[in-house]
Image (cartoon, rainbow, N blue to C red; front, side, top):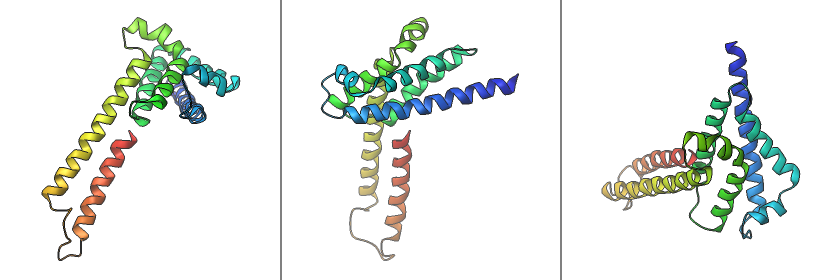
Length: 178
């Protein structure tokens, strides 16, 4: 019984991964020229839209609908953090596209749980991710100035500077990839 439950969760996770790829493809096709979500409807094929809706529906329904829906909602939040971008047309279209794809989740689960809608949650997650990155960059600059890493190299030929900058670079990459 427990093995079947684990297999269901793995299958739902694989669906969400494929969903993320489909959303990225549609967003890439939409590009900067999109005025609103209606452009996205024209650009993406019907099979792409139906695939994305089906992935959300299958993830949110079934034996463990609550777990699947919760996973789907959290997935949308994590995806917003990964693809966080400054405010602008491309960001708005991406959020509207995702909100449209996750409309089933909004309609049947988010209201019941008294959660913010997917679009609101994605905007908030993107804003938080951008603020976190800004704080990290500011901390790095402050630290680099304090350690005089921006100045001339020292007797070791700059190896210590290079090592510390690589460590900070890895930290920033990890924060950027969440």
